[in-house]
Amino acid sequence: MKVPKLGTDPFTLFGPGEIDFKMKIICKPRITITNLTVVFLFIFFAVRIWAAMSVNNSMFFVLISFIPMASLACLFFVNCGFAVFHPKQRMAHIIMSLLIIIMLIWFLPLSINWHMNTQRRWFIQKGIQIFQPMADKIMQNKAKITYGGMPLDALVGCPDVYGYTNADGSITIRFRGRGNWRRAGYFYYSGNKMTVKPGDTIYFGDDCYTNFFHLTNGWYEY
Image 1 (cartoon, helix red, strand yellow):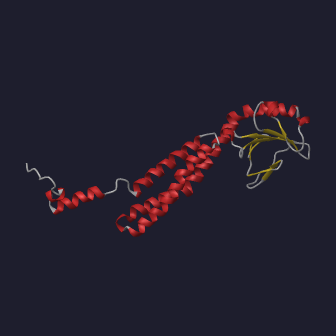
Image 2 (cartoon, rainbow, N blue to C red):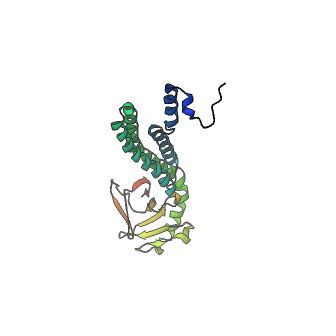
């Protein structure tokens, strides 16, 4: 075995073909744009499935969904750029761009609807057993409820519960949703069933909520 002298350039020990091959191995990036896109597609898919199966509305799901979604949006433009300027890898980057479009435009709204259906199914099966006794107790004390809205936390032992007396004498009771989500929850309306249309608005004092949904009997989701 030939031992090289001290100070010898290591690349002089190989032929031109061997040097070129080894330089390609050294310079080849370990993480490619395609691989990175696949990773974020998988993360986003897993997070949205997890969120869709959860009955909670939580900022946690909003944050962990936003990070991979924003990353995919950036990777879409990167893949488009690589598809234009790197002809040898054009098809791979076009496929990645199309997968990102499908994930953000088709799968994201689908997972949101799935999550909403999961919440509504939970309320009809289990949630009403929690909220109906509180609504019944409030209705037994409805004379105490004012027109402008009255906190009823102490009466039912639940935070962020408000009662409103409407102009026709009916009562509306607002409950915060699961996961302490302030912008989504349930309300009980003692009057006749409301005909709900997309974009309809309901007011709780000075607060305005749109797109409420009839669940069962006098219960609605906002």
